[in-house]
Image (cartoon, rainbow, N blue to C red; front, side):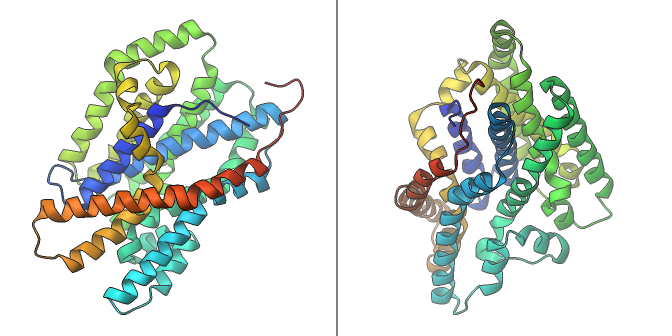
Length: 355
């Protein structure tokens, strides 16, 4: 089963992972690296919902075994490699084996360890977002089956998902100041709104009845709305810290809304100047290897900080980025691509007579 490929979405991934790299690297402007993770969440909600709803339209069902197999082949090998890399690095530099951290990461429960017990996973602390995504992947096929059986009209599904996202945002906002920052930031239940916003966009794209209407929507998005939305995301990164109560109140849903508008511009029309910039090949390449970059960058940062603690920040950051990009490139071509070729064995057959 093939889906349309939008190079500009890989470019947007590059922007998202760049935000994370800059924030974790101590670049002064970037006060909220978690915003990059929110962008990944919206992208994941959009792409996974597109894949699942397309499979339902073509076959009248969703093969859960195949879906989970494809997710493992995409995410599992590089994560195992990262855990091995971290184990070697921590044995070398800290003389301890991170057994608990690796167990939490590989079981995709690290976010709850952080949310409920404030566990700090040091070199693997960033893997909380992978846990949230995997928990989403576990639940979401069931949600899509329910939506497809209850309602055929994509526009109605959009309303249902947006309503659900709004309820999650209200639920989270009501906890600000009552529960810990960790509980609000790392729980699946408090972060589902960004994933649901992306899912709603997937059905919105399907609901556009004519190409002319799509082009009309794209005209406004490409010239005015999407660039302002992306600028707004960078404004939040600069002016708001990730643990600020404001993020829990409205920040996450604002970032999600802005990301939805940018992605809508890229997939509905795809001809705006922003789409052309994000389709620039160096950005597309970084987007393709962004998963490996995200996984490996924090362990690399820890290693460089321990080996070069007195070097100037620009020097340390340059070395961190160079090593992270190099390792991620090697991971992509030597590990990830080999397993991605196996995904074809788990693609659903196209039903006769269906699109």
